[in-house]
Structure formats: structure tokens, C-alpha cells
Image (cartoon, rainbow, N blue to C red; front, side, top):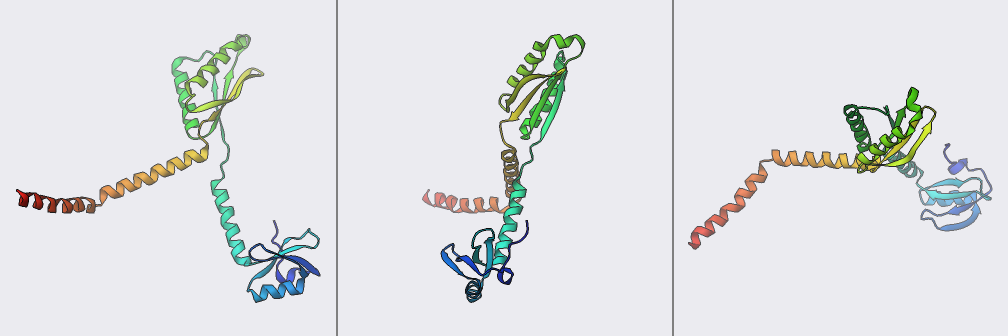
Length: 215
């Protein structure tokens, strides 16, 4: 996105002027608007070039650009890219393999990711879709505390697919990890600081003296 025109680059006869605090000044000649900007040590910035007449605002353009850059950086930092992990199962999977696959699903959901679970049918298994449906249903029930069925099981050619969504959004998971890290760092710092023990001992000494005096 190109930068707006400012000051002498605004080449129109008149503008609808907005003051630095958002107040409506009205339609003025561009020369008068530039004079007001110079008197206030501000810039004249064209904020709505397609309006008739164009809308211009008095502002500190350098400060405006800086604040806009900070907001854009924060938006990028907080942006969460949706990642869909995939787990593939066979309809007659043994219990050990099932637990292993379920562990992967649990880890993905805890991390705030969606999980696409695919049941792969081969040969005669294609005539028994209920096996895949029951397996997906069991998996959804086993991880119900961590995720929910976002897309119900449905046949997709030789496969059956279900999508699980995480109970906690990725931003929430990330914030929790940050909080845990900060709490852990604070605990370590408190443990390593001997002054905490010294203070408690210092406060206890007068109490012992008072007790012995009273006795």
C-alpha cells in the first residue's frame, strides 16, 4: 500500500480539513490548510483521496507512521497460522498402535492444532465402513477433554475422514506457555536470592527478644 500524499504533494484546490483531534474544520483552500499545518508544526495528510473534495488531516506524520508500524508488527506477532496435522489409521489397528496414534493426536490438540484423522480401507475392508466410523467415534471420545469433532466422519473414496479441533486456541496455548515460563523464571530467581531468607530471620529476631523479656 502506497503512502498517502502529504503537504506540498497534495495538489488539489481545496480539501475537507480534519483537525489533529478529529474535529471537523470544513472545506478550505489547500493553501490555508498548509498554513494551518505549518502554524501547528504538523503535517497535512491526505487520508481520503477519492472523496470530493479529498479529506486531509492535520497530524504528526512521522509519529503516525511509527505507530502504524508498531501496530502492524504486533498484528504479525499475534497472527496464528492454522495448521492441520494428519494421522492415518487402519480400521483393524491393534491396541498398542492405537495408543501411539492417540498420543500424537493428544499432543497436536494440546498444541492448539487441528487434526485430520484418516481411516484407510483396503480390499474387503471397504465393505465394512462401520469399523472406521466406530474407531473414529472412539478416538473422539478418548480426547473429548482436549478437542471436539469439527468435521464429522465422512467417506472419501477408499478413506473415511474426521477433523478434530482443539479445545484451546493456539493463542491461548502460547500465552499459557509464556506465563508458565515467566512463573518458572520468577521462582528460580526467588530461590537463588538469599536475601529472602535473611529478611525472615531478621524479622524473627526481635520477636524472640520480646518473648524472653516478657518471661
